[in-house]
Length: 430
Image (tube, rainbow, N blue to C red):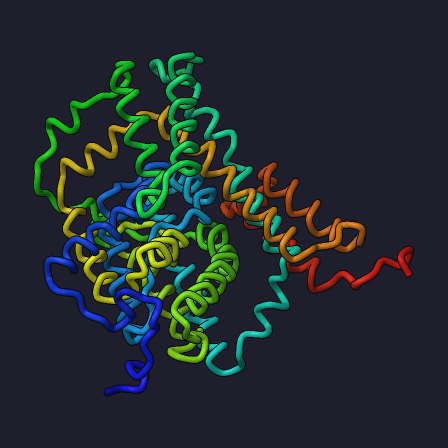
């Protein structure tokens, strides 16, 4: 018996290395995949990517993560919301080619940081990304998308123009309210999939209102390969430094989320994953998953908070179930009618979900500031947060020649720089 199998968490129904029978494995795996489903496909819908490839990359990424972490951590990789802002901008300018380069660069940053941590430890990461920097950046990610959510929820496209449609707004409000109700009043496992349930109810209401186009679903085949986007096969690769630099700095933001997820998993499973298999391995698994996603057409992937919720409620921590969920996602990605059905979700339904989702992202940034008791009576903290928020939300992009850096990227770099440069106290406070 190997060392990591000597301990068994008595609180778990199935602990990390417990293998369920095949019928149980099948049911638990599909259940786990559907808990991840809503969030995983929402990112590609918002950006304009194919949902099938997002499912495929999340499944492959999860299997890679489990392999690199030596099957010691029950984690699922899903589409990251952190990169939505630059991905939406790149989709309009460079197409997927720019997103691919940004996604791969994010993975490379993870691997470089993992290498440094393996040699020097991780204390330096906390110094460049304290709560006063991370909190406002996460708030920017949510609030800078507020306009997009409002447009999706209210504006109907007519030819080349957009017009306000009260019917759209009613669909968006119904979708928002039922999703809030599912969050507040459901219990057990079903309470972990409010986004998926909200999408379903909103879709059905939109269908009743006559704004759903099902022609794509009718024409789609049952079995078809996901829409892979592979460099030198589907497109010619032209290096775009602007695309890389617009997404790469945000890797440090998702690293803090990743570290937080590992901390929660440590408590949940009664283990210390920072020591075994080590933070360098968990970051490497996350980074390699994003690199693979970039080479096949998917968005950046990262560990999911929803996964932790499923583990806590079901008390099923088996990595075999996580591997089954990953395989299920890969299989579902080849169901053409499913991808077409997801793509037929009308914009007001997406807008309604986005009201809650983007607001929750921003609120999580605020929660970091509150939980860490950041003192805004200190001028240093006020200067850092104010600069990040206005530059990021206002999208004060930095353009030089053909290079373009989004306001979020500029705000991230500036926030890190100010944190390292500014003294702990202003002269007037001494």
